[in-house]
Each structure stands twice: as structure tokens, then as C-alpha cells.
Length: 119
Image 1 (cartoon, rainbow, N blue to C red):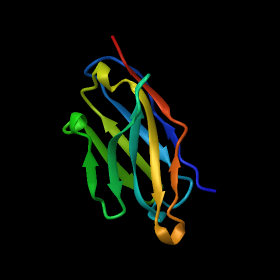
Image 2 (cartoon, rainbow, N blue to C red; image 1 turned 60 degrees about the vertical axis):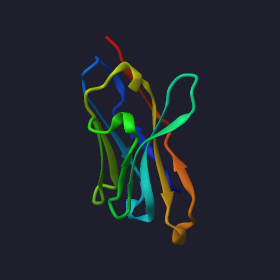
Image 3 (cartoon, rainbow, N blue to C red; image 1 turned 90 degrees about the vertical axis):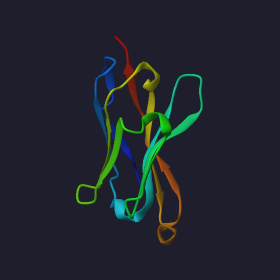
Image 4 (spheres, rainbow, N blue to C red; image 1 turned 180 degrees about the horizontal axis):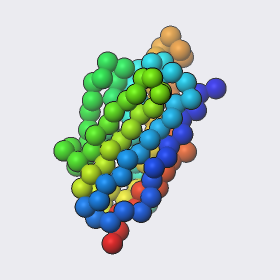
């Protein structure tokens, strides 16, 4: 059973930082791509950052230079370091992973963790 579990959300003041973690409960080398999406209240779910098995990285334009996605193949974790947070970053953040075709090519989502940026 593949399961993704986020942690690290919370309330932070504008300009502050948070680090989100996602535990895969499986070897993350089984995934072709993993990453983070977010969904603000009343809006759709949008890509924040992705990292491929070969460490190809992509960021949504508004987070470039502020957010950093990384992976730890030993601990089977991915992370999202978020700096210079602003109220527009307030959303539920979801961990995402897509298995390699040899493992079924299925997509998985975590349950989400709330990030609130407010003074």
C-alpha cells in the first residue's frame, strides 16, 4: 500500500519560513516524479514544485527563488523549504507522487497540510 503523509504546516507570519515534509512509506525510487501542490480556499489545486527521479526540478513561477524542493532517498522523504512566505501562499499543501510504469504508473496524494501566512 502506497501512502504519502505530509507534516510541517502551520501558522507563520509574512516573511517567515516553514519546511514541509512528506513521508512516502515506500522507497521513493519507485516514483518517477514527486512534488507539492497547493489549494487555496475556493480555488483549484495548483502545482508548486516537482522533482523527478533524475532530480529534474520545476517550480511554479510565483515561488521561484523562495521555495526549494528536495528529496532524501535514504529516508524516503521529500521536502519543501518555504522562505519569504506571504499571505498569497496560504493554502492546503499536498504531497504528490506518480509511480514508475514498472510499478503501475499510478498517482498518489497525501491528505494535505494547512499553511497559513498571516500577521
